[in-house]
Length: 554
Image 1 (spheres, rainbow, N blue to C red):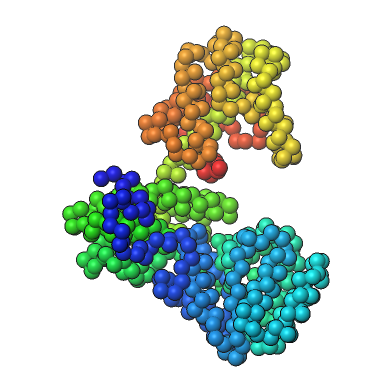
Image 2: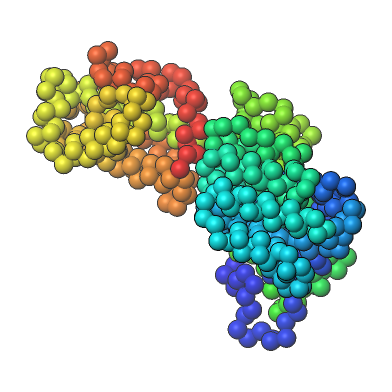
């Protein structure tokens, strides 16, 4: 049976209509109540800090993509933000998705609107709060809004109400708030005793980093939250509870599925739920397979979810890359550990990105470890291409200078005006965007592999004494290199089979051997600011590993 027959959450056309409800079908969306699984330690921490303490302190929930941050916040919001606090104040639960706010005032106005709506729906103190809310709604300026909102929240507090506001997707605050004042106002609302709004934030990054990305000025806003509640992968107990939610899985299947999910998803809640959802849909129609057929069913589920799994891994790596931690992850897992410190590995483990082994660390799942292994190997391929690219540009410039003298660029502009103009346009964009960081290089430093090939083909008779070998040999090698280089540069796997990559490495080595030695005065080999490769056969030493990280840049 092909994997396509196990479409995610899709019943087969001839299947029965009275299917058992899929308890995993909502994966990817926040869950709460009976559907919520595990996180007892995190819930206890939030309960103790925010709901059973006298001060109703604020708390932040932090973790990588798809570990259930919003689900935890929703569960706490629905289950704990009810009734009265230790001080006897009535909880007013509020939910704000920060990514939906488009200005620094919109978050605060939504806070007031949500509170007023909650009070109005229950016919509570309309005569005292409605005039203050209308006054707040009428003002436009930041200062007026800030003062009116503070007055409104103080009145609410005096009426014996305790606001608990979940600020979901708080990473977006770095784009909504572009100065320190909004953060300081949030801090005041959460910190001042006569207001004391309890904030619960969810974010992929720590609050301090979010603030720094918004404004260069220091802010004490993150300090009111204490230690973050960091979410990672499910532990064995939580994963077992997730499996137990299926009506199809009996005691004899739980251990095989637990082992399988540990290998494929490593306890990652989103991936584990997706895999179990696929199995449920299949088994709801055809029944639970006998033990001999179970591996086949599990393999089909993995194949069905393969694209979803890769997208999850890529999103996680994008976050690490954005935080300048991706190279640290690769150092921890594959070495050598040049900059990574023990505390870096411990943080990655807390976030559920890696897990300890008997002799070190590995990715949170075997699947993720294998994915990173492919990424690491491709980083080496990119480093080889960087070396080849640098040497090719320098060697071609040397050959052109030997053929045409110091007027070689003038000659190229006469013969291939459009090509040179495109290179100069790229050069101008870089110099305009990076100013002093972009040195005054040769336009060939902005040529793509196919551009370099076009130059070699048009000027072959003049370049043959310097380049040697055959015209067809150069064309074959540079065409294949150009074909592989583009998907590598954009982190795509399509079109790069193992056989093609092996040929790519072989041809890069050929080009490095065939190239002439660049001259000392050659600007393309000296002025770019990049580390240039040593002259000679590439086998004389290993590929420069300082550029490994470049292989995983978008």
